[in-house]
Structures are given as C-alpha cells and as structure tokens.
Amino acid sequence: MSRDARWQELLELLVDRGRLDVEEAATALGVSAATIRRDFDQLAEQQMLVRTRGGAVVHGVSYELPLRYKTARQASEKQRIAKAVADLIAPGEVLGLTGGTTTTEVARALAVRTGLATGSPALTIVTNALNIANELAVRPQFKIVVTGGVARPQSYELTGPLAGGVLGQISLDVAVLGVGAFDVAYGATAHDEDEAAVNRLLCERATRVVVAADATKLGRRAFARICAAEQVDTLVTDTAVTEETAARFTEAGVSVLAV
Image (cartoon, rainbow, N blue to C red):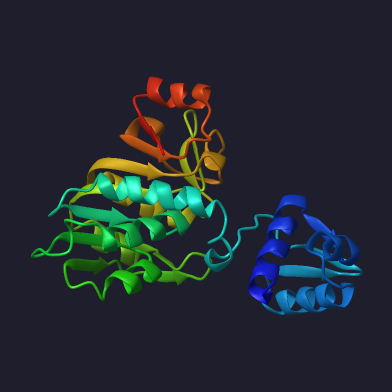
C-alpha cells in the first residue's frame, strides 16, 4: 500500500471514529505500529489531525478531508454519475461547476464526451474550482471562466466577495453542484459556509440546477445551506439510492436519475 493510500484510509477511519490509537490503526491497515506512529506524526505536522498519547484525534470540531484524500471514495459511482451529468449538457451551453470530487469527474467526462470536441466554444464553463479550471484550460473547445476569490485549501475552491462580484455579472444555462449532503427538508448543503455562499450564487444565476451526489450523501445535512430542494431540477445519483429516498425527492419536484 502506498503512503498516500495509507494516509487516506487513516484519515477516513479517523473521521468515522473520531479517535484512533496506534495499535488499532495498525491492525486495521495491516502495517506496523512504527509506521502508524510516523504517519500520525507527519499528518499532525500538516494539521490534519491532533496527536495524542498513543494515538490521534480529528483536528477541530468540524472536520473535513482535503479534496486530494477524497478522490477514491465511491470512485466508480462518481464516475457513472459524472458521465450521466455530462450527457445532460447541450453543446453551446453556459455551465457553472462548483468544486468537489464528483464535479471534478463531471469536468473530466465533459472533456472526453463526443460531440463536444469542437465548437466556438463547445461549452462555456464557469467555475470557482482551481483544479477544474486547470484540467479544462488545455481544452481549446471550452471557454473557461474562473471566479475571483480566496482559495480554500481543502477543496481548491475560490470563495468570498471577489467570487460573488464575477457571478453577479453573468447568466448560466445550468449549474452543477457538488454537495456535502442533500435532503428534502434541509436542501443542498455544504460543510463550509463560504463555499455554500458561492454555490448559492451559481444556483441563482442558472436556469436549471443539477445536484451530482452519490447515495451516501442523500437524506443527510451538512453545516451550511446552499439551496432548498425545490430549487433543484435534477438529482443525479447512483443505484444505491433507496426507493423511499428517491420518491421523497420526486414528490418535492426533483427529477431523480440513478445510474
């Protein structure tokens, strides 16, 4: 197991349990206690956990894994969702993309989608995510518009009044949201209030709104609200969504596409 893969598993275990001791982590990952101690020390130096006597605890009250450590979670589901979302976008449209692992996969699906290889432009993509802009900027068929703002290291998203200033001057055909959670009662939510504020502006500027979220995020809520469920036109999720959950979204006026 590579160090990055091991760190990802360690951080996910820590998020799930809140606290880990060295022996427990070593058994779970099948490595030596000495390796886990080194991992804990190095992750503590990056302020991704708090070292304790004999183990580690999550860093702070509200913990969120940085984007680079989320990429393997529900990977196949996210790729299927991304392809389905990309197929919903018509050539020539203006598309808003928030940050996140699922929307990053949407960007990659758009880049290889047949029918979008040429155009002037084939798509105009507005994003506050630096990693998405970086991946798509080399695609000459796409016009890439990046909002201003302050970069948030956990998600590579730009937030703050500078981002709002750009979004206030444009119109979108569709906004695709990556969310922390999505629930009929609480709507689409994010872990960070600044990200939620920018995502909310993208929704307000769009004719239609698509939420791209795997089933693990449904029926849950995160800290900051983006928009009400009634403002979402389409939910694209995976086939692990329950019939009951899908029916609740449908009753709220959200079209559910499970792939």
